[in-house]
Image (cartoon, rainbow, N blue to C red; front, side, top):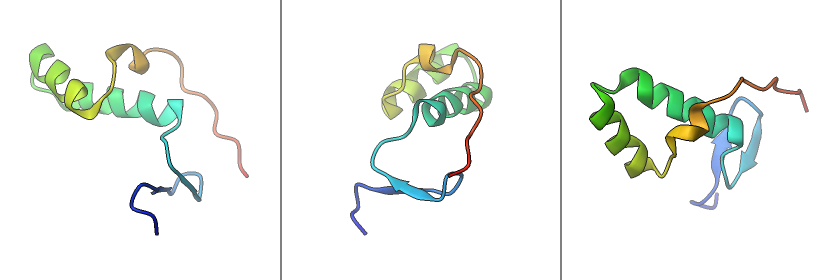
Length: 64
């Protein structure tokens, strides 16, 4: 398997880039586990995520 690909078990397919929904969930997860705002900002920056990506409603996942 190409090391640049990740298995997305929720969708049972291989993608090279995370979806907008994956990024939204990642931002919200980091925010939930961060010790404080500075910790959250540092972790999001290290992961290449923008806090604004965590805003918005969850989109419905369509089966393949």
